[in-house]
Length: 99
Ligand SMILES: [Zn+2]
Image (cartoon, rainbow, N blue to C red; front, side, top):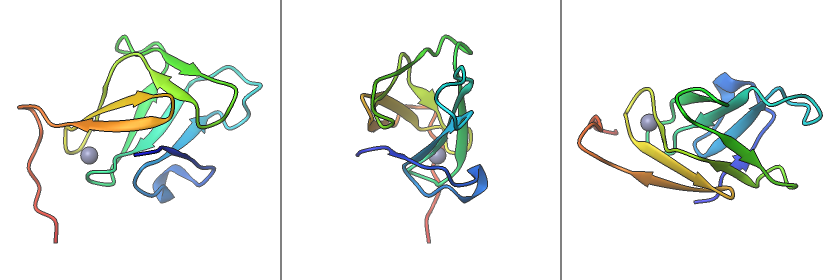
């Protein structure tokens, strides 16, 4: 699926949306809030933290993480390459029932 850059407050992000921190791209990147497409939980990706390097292209949605980001809540792995998000469920994923 495609990531959707958003300027909504982090608590209002919808599944699959990302928000840059800070919003102004002329400022040095701190990280991104990524709203997990699986459970809707907001997981922060901090640049340079946990061996995650975040590469930004010219377009706001051209985003690449050097390493998969694990959702804080459901534990799914989120691979981000050029704005495409792919989920990977490994043994650490928490199984949640959706109603
Ligand atoms: Zn999740």
